[in-house]
Amino acid sequence: MSHSDAKNIMVYVETVSDTPLNGGLEILTKAHKLAAARGEEVIAVLIGSNLEHAANTAIMAGADKVILVTKDNYEMEVYEAILTRLAEKYKPSLILSAGTLVGKDILPLVAGNLTTGCAVDVMEITDKDGNFVFTCPVYGGTVLNDLVIKGTPAVAAVRSGAFEKELVVERTGEIIKEQVGVENTVRAKIVEVVNEMAETVNLEEAQVIVSGGRGMGNKENFRLVEELALACHGVVGATRPAIEAEWVPRSHQVGQSGKIVAPKLYIACGISGATQHVSGMIGSGYIVAVNKDEDAPIFDIADVGIVGDVVKVVPLLIEEIKKIQSL
Amino acid sequence: MEMLVCIKQVPDDSVEISLDLGTKEPALIGVTPVVNAFDTYALEMAARLKETFGGEITVVSVGNDEVKNSLKNCLAVGADHAYLVKHEKSESLDPCGIANILKKAVHDIEGELETKFDLILCGKESTDYASSQVGLLLASKLRLPVATNIIKVEPMDGIMRIKQETEEGYRSIEAKTPCVVTVQKPDYDPRYPTIKSKMAARKKEIKELSPSEEVSSMLEVIRVFEPAKRVAGIKLKADNEQEVVAQAMSVMTAAKVF
Ligand SMILES: Cc1cc2nc3c(=O)[nH]c(=O)nc-3n(C[C@H](O)[C@H](O)[C@H](O)COP(=O)(O)OP(=O)(O)OC[C@H]3O[C@@H](n4cnc5c(N)ncnc54)[C@H](O)[C@@H]3O)c2cc1C
Ligand SMILES: Nc1ncnc2c1ncn2[C@@H]1O[C@H](COP(=O)(O)O)[C@@H](O)[C@H]1O
Image 1 (cartoon, protein in one colour):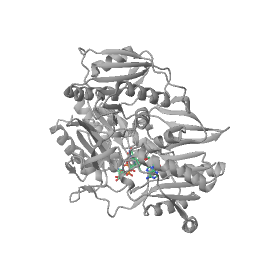
Image 2 (tube, helix red, strand yellow):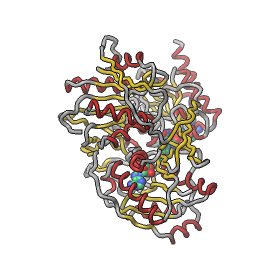
Image 3 (cartoon, helix red, strand yellow):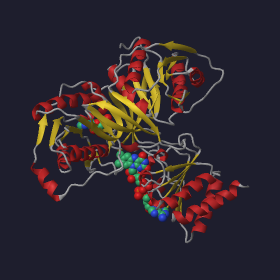
Image 4 (cartoon, protein in one colour):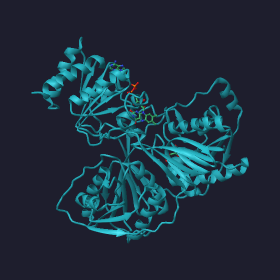
């Protein structure tokens, strides 16, 4: 694709049960700002069925145009082909998606099809003299890279929580129905989808997160983390060892291979502060850590560090916080 | 079952890498090179499959001579053959470039060993650059089915049955053989080498391959920097928990946390 005729930002917005996921909406809001400054448009792409309501939400979040493509089931290869076709037709200069499993599956393939490059885990996008610059973490987030993509369009999967969503009810936009014929290319077929999580955990949007690590000792003690979370009206998070010990389901994992979170308050209980965990919560507003080892690295990033045994400290914290909350 | 595991050597991921303020490059001197954690999971998965279904495991890596050490380690924990595609500056390649080289390597190795791979395993991502794209792009270039983030794979009646971890649970996927998978951490850990397996590995040869023609990288890093550092706040210690919690509460209420 030649550079000269590429313009506008295309955003793939993933939907679940006909509802757009927040990650996609956050990106639309960011894309709206980037596009408006260039005098360009934001084109949202939604694939599924019964998407009219979702399309309106996408417009509120910042889309100027919404392309609806009807498909019953998710198949990676079909979605990849659809997005590639739409990119060839609409010629955007930038394609974005949230870095969910789906986003991280299809975007690299779309980039490959269009012989361009794809950035993942993007934390920030800036427009520098007409070129998009992407900020990506390396080495578990201890170092950051700013990179540019030399091919057109630039393709990028954005990390959750990187941008903030703004829904403006007054916004208007155009809804376009596209039929995209793709040959039956499915080589890896999804035969069953199992939802194991009894509850939905919304760590990304939580204002308060209370996380527990290996230092909680056992499943019973881990309940203290849940109680503290309840007392602070927060959500429960965990480190990988706590998940592997089956004290809490996988959907609660915070870190490099879990969720990237940015609550106002993060309380870390019995967590050492390994890079892979810290890179997922370093964006928190205020960090409190409880650890019996006064040299634990988590104290280097905590606003308040409590040196002590979680089994003794956490119940007292619960008590004190309950007192405040009842005032 | 014939398996190929793609191995990337990365700096030890338990070491916190900082930026060398002089060179403006990540300070990697003295950091032990290791096999990418997710590739060790992939190799362990392959080793278990070999125990059940037989066949051989080949490992391949794109990198310089230093990578031979990592490949030796792979030979000590289940790999039968090891290949190095010699490339002095593999860090400068983008995922598409690596996938191109691996594609050629797959054909070269299949030719040399007179075999066809049934399963190609990659890590879900590398712990240094975490691009999480090489497996997908390799599959696309080889026109093979691919499933990412997998925690289990099993051959059955000529197809591969795959368990893919998702945010909410998992998906069962059926793919034609051969296929490519990218491996997430399963609920077991990689095995350690024994003295005996290390000795045996030392005797094995690491064969070298030449890379395919280079395609220029689509990604260009224009700035390397450190994230804004958080300043450590206060650390509270006291003889008893009541006291330390009381102190903490007063700091937090003063900061209007509650
Ligand atoms: C590729 C890769 C990806 C990873 N992804 C993630 C990820 O997404 N999320 C994640 O969390 N980890 C991840 N990890 C694992 C990570 O490296 C660390 O091993 C993990 O975060 C450590 O968890 P922890 O702090 O609970 O345990 P530990 O490091 O064992 O720390 C336990 C802490 O509890 C303290 N403690 C013990 N007993 C008590 C007590 N009674 N009272 C108070 N304190 C106590 C100890 O002093 C210690 O500091 C990943 C690792 C790899 C290799
Ligand atoms: N230089 C390399 N040599 C061999 N395999 C690699 C190389 N780089 C990446 N891979 C494979 O691709 C996976 C994902 O890497 P990445 O896309 O860089 O995150 C790794 O876990 C490896 O299995």
